[in-house]
Length: 146
Image (tube, rainbow, N blue to C red; front, side):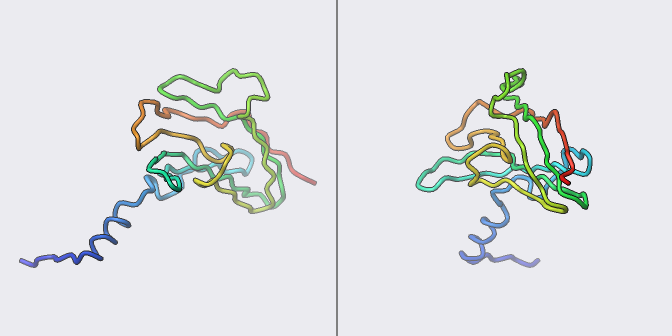
């Protein structure tokens, strides 16, 4: 029987890469409308000079068309099965407009200040009971830019 021996540096690398902070390392397509693809993945974000860890859903919007477009949508978000953004009067801060060139892809990140391309999911450290249970991009409008 072979024994596997981990050196300390190898063990540290295994822990870092074997248990990556990304929960879903691959983007998953949520919706496609008129050549515009909405994708998402969950990540853990840490904050500089803080021990807090938050889970976010990052979003990517891809223009699969051969022409530039403007894309509008409203984001509805449920925490603990209660919609917090449904039926809010516009402007509520959850209506977004994005212009994309032909073939362009724009992705959210932990560093984004706004919530156009990221959605707060839950607090990991310190733990919180408030948890994202659902989100939807609604009222999607895609307009070709001439």
